[in-house]
Length: 304
Ligand SMILES: Nc1ncnc2c1ncn2[C@@H]1O[C@H](COP(=O)(O)OP(=O)(O)O)[C@@H](O)[C@H]1O
Ligand SMILES: [Mg+2]
Image (cartoon, rainbow, N blue to C red; front, side, top):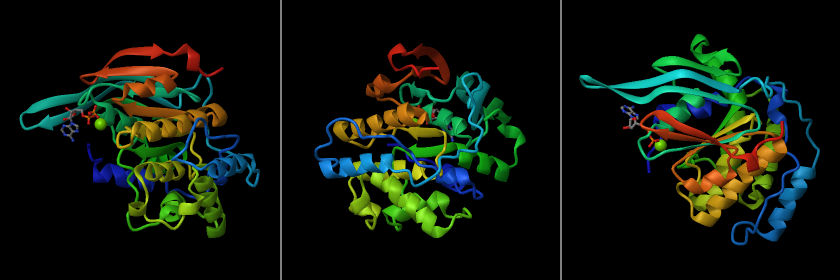
């Protein structure tokens, strides 16, 4: 397992802390949890979750420009990431061109060391390329100041990590509320949002638990709820099932797939797990920092 850099983690959490915006309190609706979840969710939990999605307590007003079928949410042009190792340069990414659109379930696969996490950090605008340009919502991120970038990134992207990255001293609800903490949202409204999201992921009865009192799958569900706190159009996940057993991993993936189908979220998953491909609308094969090929998966293609 590869630990995420502390600085990157800090950014990914801080970035979702943004100035108040009504967009933040939009619900994820019309989702139901697919498949058999015995051992993961009780039937009652699942029912509650389904109900939660029907609930219409919030107004869905996403005032963030989210792109259209013709305007990519994220665009990389000739992106290089070069690390200086002593006297030699090492290109972790070597000339990546990629456009990602709303409603895609993009899976980036490649062997260990192929540059997946490096790419994820650039797609998430957590890091700047050595060369080339990254556009988030049509804005060249290299031209944005850190606070402006943090604000846009915070509105646009929710992050999910292999190692969950929950704060161990905060309980479930507090972890989910973290991205909302510095918003000008009333705390009662934020709390409601947090409780709602925990209901969706079937953890209403674990609100008070610390991460150490949760299973791996439950922790990742907390992380998913956290990634949805500000209702961003893009969910970016680095090896989200890497620390989970197959069944729990499948549950998490089906949930992400539902988010794309029902909520038109753009899901980007970086992984070496080829199982995940079955959920993809497009698969990017990465090798030695280069895109080897891009495969369209017609079956899952979003209707445009
Ligand atoms: N901060 C860094 N300094 C030097 N080399 C790095 C750094 N981060 C990653 N690398 C190297 O870049 C390559 C790609 O790393 P990474 O993106 O983590 O791969 P993956 O996630 O596909 O396993 C690896 O060879 C790794 O050793
Ligand atoms: Mg990695």
